[in-house]
Image (cartoon, rainbow over all chains, first blue to last red; front, side, top):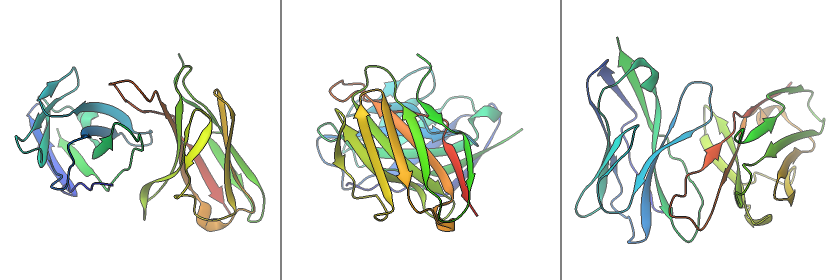
Length: 110
Length: 115
């Protein structure tokens, strides 16, 4: 499985944008980049995914580098509810395993 | 749909007892995953089913663990005999393989404590 590297933890002030980085230098051409997050005492939840182009949805934006070796999850205005562990995951379309790394623990400061 | 449903939410058992965790995936999904989460090891994939068939069980820790999926709407993870080191939160997730939107939906988890 292709691996990802994320910072262990990050902090953000409430109502400010947050940029969560992820490195995936060994990504293959068929790997999709997925982001999940896990709020305290809950199961992981899907945030966003993409292949090559930048993606937006109601939760966040995903910016993918041109060489696809890195990506950034963007929360446009952090709220206290966004405090969670964020996981960057690579998934092959032909094999749907979802393998989690340690993720980034995001703290939001009021 | 009520989402992925796991039961029980909490389980406390004595070492050596058999434990059965249950999962009802989202209707229409054809892939199901069992995970274990601990502070030390994070989220570990235990086993992955596709169309009720186990595809990858390389994450199952040892023979004490077994998982079944007798039909598309039900799966079990059994630990026999249980040990204190099995204490963890166990998550079940389901998804539809074959769609471009391969979002996996997770249940609320079962917190297992083996004393």
